[in-house]
Amino acid sequence: MLKRRLLLLVAISLVGCAPESRIEVVLDKSDPERLLQFYFGSYVQGGGDPFESRILTRQGRRFYADPAVLDAHHPGLGALLRQRALKNVLSWDSLGSFLAETYYEARGLPPTLQAFKERWSYTEWLAVEVDGPMTKARRRIYVAEQSLREALQAYRQAGNRVRYATGTAIVADHYQDSMLIEHTAMVRRRDGFWDFVTYAADGKLAPATAALPRALATPLQCVGCHFGSKQFEPERSFPDAAPRAPEGLRAYYVDSTARDAEVTRYLEEHARRSDTVLGLYATLYLSRLRAGRDTLSASNLALLNELGL
Ligand code: HEC
Image (cartoon, rainbow, N blue to C red; front, top):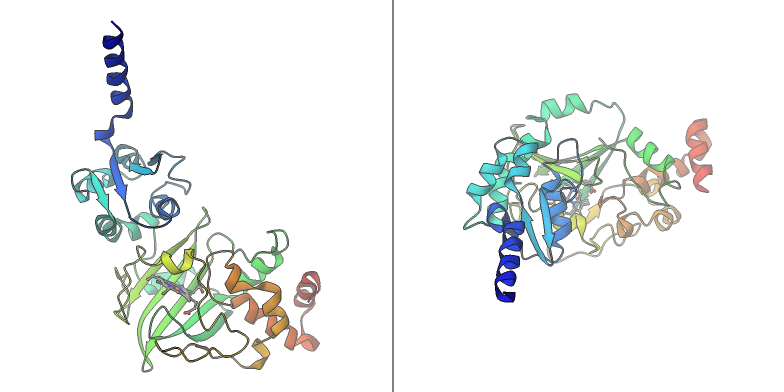
């Protein structure tokens, strides 16, 4: 009698989990939960947490994706996810294939650089040239001054953090030997993550960056450095010049008006990377405001005063 009841209990609990309807996601990475939140959060209609919307569930240290729920958010993608999974297990590589096939469209990212520029058509951009670790190409990175001002105006309210508004875009043009070879960009999402985009030299969406020194699948491989806590050069040594690294040049091409040591210490922008942004845009912006204090507009002066700078 007892044995039969036990058997029934086991049977009910098996049906309850219905493991065969879900796909196990196995990434073999140190913080899979955060990565999965980003990757699968890309498919939550209207933005949101994929665990809350039940696209993903967690059982102990295992993670499962539910194709039926995914389909409810994006018809057809559940079936595709099932196809990409091998024996009901989605590996890092198969997740990469799925993202490459579906991510840009699901995110509604502009299909061409031209369309991207039309959507973010600010006239005043902070621009800075950098040699950094992401690519051997020289990067020219742009952040709209208005986005910076808004983030800095909200700095104290955000608990002394540089947090950009939803919809903010940061764009980087990549040059090799003065030739424009590609563009990458990040767009701030509502859920606190950023979308990552790569456009090839012809202005069309590309699944990965150029192989300098290695191609980075977008967005699969974009998050490692941006989510982690490792400090990179040249940001780590700023406002001083970075020591020459064996891997290549590390430098910000800015003059002394952008290298204010007090502002750098005040924001600790790179070390804190409050918004998974790695560059020093707010630092450069405030440094230049301080250097030109005598000729500032009333609103910029108010911004410095409010920050106590
Ligand atoms: C090797 C580490 C690394 C990887 C991987 C990486 N980035 Fe970055 N990224 C950086 C660093 C460091 C910066 C700061 C400026 C610089 O060095 O170019 C940065 C800056 C950026 C910026 C400017 C905004 C910011 O955070 O400063 C964009 C846009 C960007 N990366 C896009 C991407 C995209 C798209 C990918 C994937 C294709 C990617 N990144 C992968 C390290 C990385």
